[in-house]
Each structure stands twice: as C-alpha cells, then as structure tokens.
Image 1: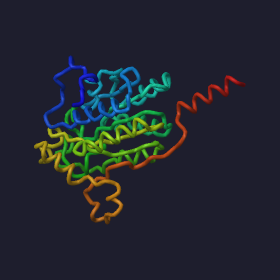
Image 2: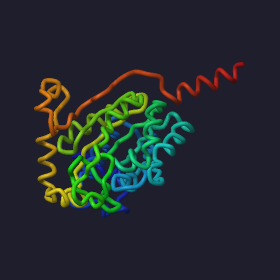
Image 3: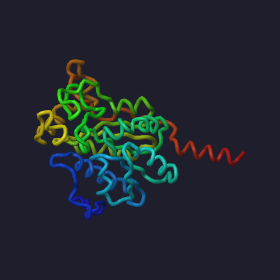
Image 4: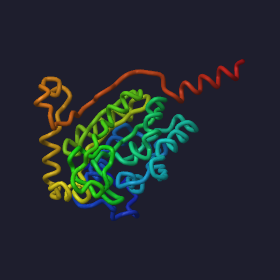
Length: 270
C-alpha cells in the first residue's frame, strides 16, 4: 500500500475540505505522481493563491508558498527564475487563476515558463461564498446568480493553448488514474504545463444546482466526460453537454528560463 504520510504534514489535519469535495483526491494523485518520478521533497516547490484548492500546500510536506489571491503564478515565476532546477508546481482554482489571476495566467502560458499548473475547476467560488466564477456554466445557479448564470464560461484549457502553453490536459477526479497520469506527464514536460481538473463541490455548487449529493456529482463526471479519442468520432449533437478530457496540446517550443540564461550568457560574452 502506498505510504502517503511521507509527503503529508499530519500536524495540519483535519483538513478544511467539505465531505464530497474532490480536492483530496487530487492531492493523493499529485503525491503519487511526485513519488513515481522520484522527485524529492527538496527538489519541489508548491505555490498556491487563495481558495479551497489553494489550501493544498498546507498539507504537503515539501517546500510550499501560500500567496495572495490570484498571484500564485507571479510568485511561482520568481521561484523558477531564481532556481530553474526546482520542480515548481502551482495549485490554483478556476476563480483564482482565471478571474483575479487571469492576466498572470495568460502571460505565464505565453512566456512558456516551466511550471506545472494544476487548476482545480469546480465551476464556482467554493470558499468565498459560492459566487459565479469564470467557468460557471450558463444557466447554473450561484450566490451571485440565484436565477441562473447568463454569462458564457471560459474554456480554461483552450485559453492556455491559445496563449502558448507547451502542454495542456483536462482530467477529472472520477477517473483518478487518468488524472494521475496527466499530472505526471505535466511534471515531465519542459514548458508551461496545465492540467485542468474537474472536481465536485457539493456545498457551494451542488446544493444550488440540485446535486448536493456528492455521488450525483461523481456520476455526472463519469457520464459526461469523453476521452479525446472518442470525442473526435462524435457529432456536434452528441458533443452537446459533454466535456472533452485527455491531452489537448503537447508541443515543443522554447522555454522561458532556458532562453533567459542564453540571453545572460550572450550579454556577458559581449
């Protein structure tokens, strides 16, 4: 049996996540991925902002940095810039990354700096009151949309691809083995790597949208996520209401810190 305790700060338990939240599933998948790649605790840094997802570093016994709302990526950029050999992992949420942190999200992907970003997408602001986030589906209810959200949601994975990320994948906590595999692929990739992870929020999202039962939310993930290989064979009508999961982009392009080191060497040689 896998020993999670070597990566866990047990003194910070019990955790704050609600019963039925998927964040603990992601935490365990991440720990297994780190251990599977033989990344030591001294070789990794985890950076987060504010939100349910961003509590993750408090429970992980590696180097961690808990920053301000929406600012995880600038802090992580500084860490990676100062120590390029470190494995820098950013844990963020749909609101933290793509609302207040949206500009940082775009430019970190554009620079293609070697960060592994795990974006927990629960379709809502779970910790701060259940408000609409940039990913709340149209028609769904939130504390700021009691009659249904009228705004179109962001395609967060598509946004990262358009901005220039090297590796972009989408996973979910129902298919946990696939989630772990994609986290591992992201950790191995050189460049900006995003794994958007669909995770249930029965408290803030589910109870407002007739899915307060965590099992229903997990069943929704099971029934409405479609692997990329199968997705390509579906008609537009069959894709309606479904979510494509899997590796969405995997390209080779210059990485920011490596290019910056080349610039320093060139300038010093002049």
